[in-house]
Image (tube, rainbow, N blue to C red; front, top):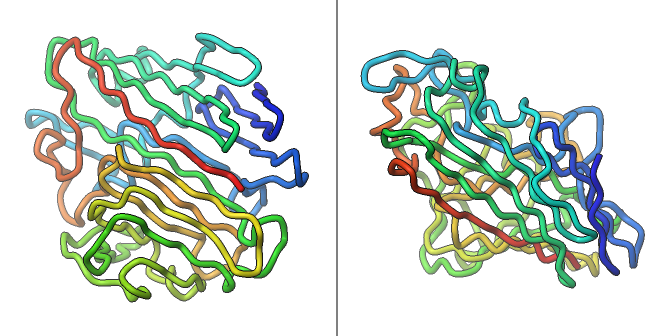
Length: 293
């Protein structure tokens, strides 16, 4: 594990998958991130796919490729580009293993920078190929709920800042894994902005919210002085998820650029809704910030 630290926070990052393992509030001595055995992950990186592909496959120019759930980056070893007390840059480059699944030369950097208010997480995706490169990218942090043991899961709210219309979410079906139907439905919130948590919300599985000018997502409770805020303007969607049917004390708040498949046949990634397309020899910078109280 690699640590970065400042006066208020300590973060541990595993270069295998470039996954944050712990985020410690040093002032109050608690960990924001889930570390339970029931779901043995913490904050996996999703690249170059989000969700499960139909038949675990996708199409590029009519050719079929295999793609595991959420892509392959979480199973790859990243190398250290730079490391200071409060900043870490890790890098994954395409290799013989990735090119069997994804026939592009690419470079993916993850940048973790501690701030006085929390943590900035940045991504730089570079297309080193001579063809347009489609990809999806997401972050999957799982936060302990309740925070610092204050209150219970049902005492917490997720608040969305910036949207003016009722929140729209992707309709999900299980076949047996969750896929989109391609339709949107409205989720009940207070004043279009505030979703009260309970485990029943997640019985169908993940809740993917269409980003209707949402700039910030806040997890908070009147029974806790602690909160988490994600500034997500660079992302087109945000997903909420906890392990369905188990009533576990964690919530994933996942900024997405990209979407799971609509149920049916494998999708052509050049045409797939939500995918980003990067031109040859160009790069895309994406960033979000966690404010940790």
